[in-house]
Length: 328
Image (cartoon, rainbow, N blue to C red; front, side, top):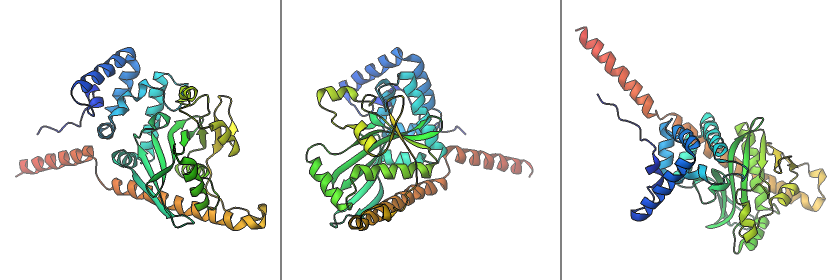
């Protein structure tokens, strides 16, 4: 019996989102880059063809093929280093059982939490993969108020002395963003949405066994060149410092991955204690929902056999059957 081959990732897989002349043009551009960066391309394509999961991921996110040719996570990586970083990211994700999480987030935004703010406005937290901000990271936590985007946190898994979560982007909305941020801050009992996201990321890192949150600085940002044109306005250095992050020798910052800790109310003036307590309760509610959503997805997929497992089982049944028939 002929075995069904898993889909193979080729250069054509990276241009399926185009049609006609545009597809031919993008295919030629992709092939030209693969020639210019022959060895990194060979390594990257070999990795994408090492497991059926990556073929399924590329089907949802064909831009993954060209990701190695553009500035990614930080502007300090060359093409070969970007390949190593991407392989490390997806290898770590697989080691913690996150393949189904990533695949679901690539297919459509994965809902992690829904909650109400102080004003009773509804908020939701989603996880996405392959979104517009993917030059700042492979995954993104996105916070919405009703249908309005409040904040996006782009990140990847990065290996330094030990695994860490690298945040390459933390941005709010562009146009009426300031008003939305203020409304959300009031709804979160005085907790700024970006600080809420950073606390959630530190807690997530702790849950996944990461040691640090690695925070990309202004000069090292993947889109730092956009700052000169006024297209990148966020002051990452200032925000990281305001959150107590330590400046590294490479110009980036870091914070420890820590679980959510109940506040020591004695450290705050009496009139702020109620709000501080409610901030903590809100964080626990959101992180608890997110943790359960991630664990449910991993647990649900662990019970589904892979194509390889089905084939191995089928082969075993076939050989056992022929052995039994031979003994009749």
